[in-house]
Image 1 (tube, helix red, strand yellow):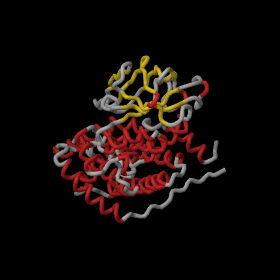
Image 2 (image 1 turned 30 degrees about the vertical axis):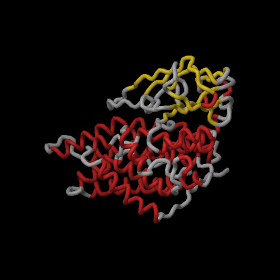
Image 3 (image 1 turned 60 degrees about the vertical axis):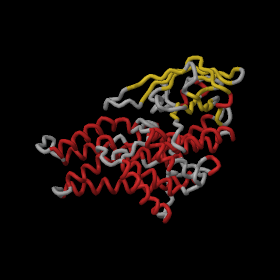
Length: 383
């Protein structure tokens, strides 16, 4: 039994800290005048032009080889750009998934042709992907997927439905997790991944509006959609291993604890001149939690860069990050007058209301709390 998970220390990097000044200046100029409520959308905020500008500055695909449009910078430098964008509430949704996980997956498993075709466009901020994992009957239990890609001459015939697909309506392609052989009873066996062009015939994308009035979720239906054979990523039947590696990238980043930074900053500003001891303790506790999660998340990033198995480590970051972020609105409500007579507080309450509406999703996206804790228990040798 190994009931201990440790995270490597990652000292501050001089090049990364120099880059921090550059990205902060860029974000300050680009986001001038953007309201806190808009910034609160964080990595679900869509702005294609902003993503293109990030690509022009070399802030996407930062660690990738130059021959694929990357910049061969360190993972520490990439991490700085990511956390600064999140802390500022930059609208990074257009390129986010492609940069965070689809690109790295293609680098690891993709064919040379796929790398040459897609990676430079991702790095330029001009090619967006979405995640084709969850289904109506297979959410956190990903091994229950039923979407099927039947091998046919020249490719695959795809039928099935994907649900809660973030940004599918804006994406150029979906990294589809599906069955290419066997049945759902086979669980992980017989699964594969296809990089599917979402403009192909037989694919319908329908919006799902969330409680906050935003549209970034979608239902994507495949009905006899023909997908060419060169869309296969990695080996046919190796989908489960590949998707688990992909989820490590999805679960460990600073978005797992910086999604509510606009609310934390707004709360700190509101209490700056009137904070009592209770407020100081509450804000101090939030800051210490974020600092700890940052240490852990940076450790996961270092492990991934070194090719180490970071699945349990990433899962712990995701679970603890969701717990923290879902507690922040309650902390704010306990410290702020809910019947204000000043404009500043009323503006803050609008920000609070939006954040409260979206926080339930924090413990769903990337895997529910129950599933995550099962993964953690297995990683600790407890089950």
